[in-house]
Length: 401
Image 1 (tube, rainbow, N blue to C red):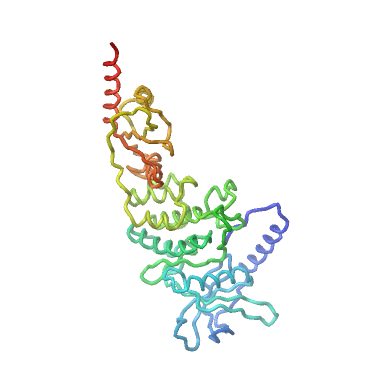
Image 2: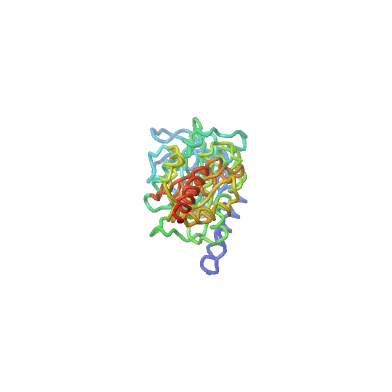
């Protein structure tokens, strides 16, 4: 159930109270009954309700059987029903927008029904996911997904998200409850009930979220506007859950190094859920990372350290302070961390506790991110660094009469 943060605004508080009242009704009552038959005035198809499958922020979902003939609507499907019109309208819109997309749950029929007491229920006839939502599937199977399957299926989900992002729309609810496991274990994205369009790239004000996979800075209120990179955060959570085979808990950055996958995929997850400004900025950027191997972190040679902006990473054979003094004597400007000003990074031995594997230290990941942005950064191994320092010292000595 999406969580609505508190607001001092009276209208927002009233909306929140109304939302909670409806949620209370949805938790207590069944909107539809087994064996009940409902009809669509649009398509004239009838649907026989079989059983309740689940409840959520939109309403309730039932397994249903289509009655009558249809070349488009399958015999077995789901009926999603709610007393609220707002989410229904959005779901109907996105069902039409994404119709034919192989990675989006299909919407076959959209219609209201009127009860005897005059109450209106808003219904969607949806594609039935054979294995249910991802959360339930992982809990039942208890199995991890292979890295190849994870990359392939998440890239498929990102195709849907990418279309939204290109249209300046944000999903905001990419949870394992809204990703569905269909035939042949293909993942599809559903539930577009809280998608919003942003008027500019600064994002949209957050009033509704699911705290299971919402970014920590959004939950804490330190980042008031939801952006495409916050959708990316949620996808990073999904990747971690798939390779772990467990969707019950969110992934935190210290957990990344223990994920049972390659260092490259660990780096992708870390960048998704790590520091906000360093995340992938869109679904398309993340697809590219999943589908293409990273450029190797080859070391290079330099003739001088004079004037370079230099940082150190890894474990050096000599104390870091001694190396920094030597670099300064050789004419370098030394920084404590890698940044857009960095032109040279001296690499020591990897630390066993690096965030995302051998090539996944924080500074190394930042170097890769900066290189993607077009920054030229030279990587030096430690022996070459000390040879440069020694050469500089020898030249300085030779110049003294």
